[in-house]
Image 1 (cartoon, rainbow, N blue to C red):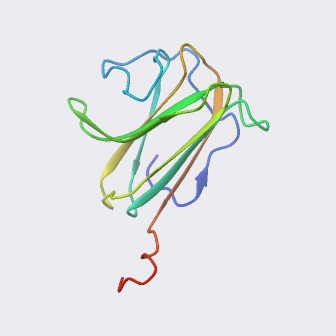
Image 2: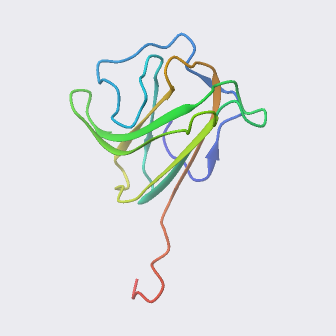
Length: 136
């Protein structure tokens, strides 16, 4: 993947079935990890919303997804945002700011515990409007 402006994959297009845990360890916000998959994108703007839609409204079969956004290299990864779905909820979204256009960012997706299945990935990388009353 390269650039995303209001992108959504097809429902159920991605899966963590058959995936394994990497050597990066479990992100601190996750409840375990065992079947993670990674994605990357090159930022085109400063803000991003990432959604993982599993077993909800025909978007996939993954229960209780978890998502992590990071930057760095294969030897050192720095967390930007991290979230897991609430128990029994089969989608999760994160929002982050401060991204640098042109830099590569990494998304990790897994299911709570040992949950596996298919999911839809949505990414909107955009420039947020300036706060009300600012000179921006």
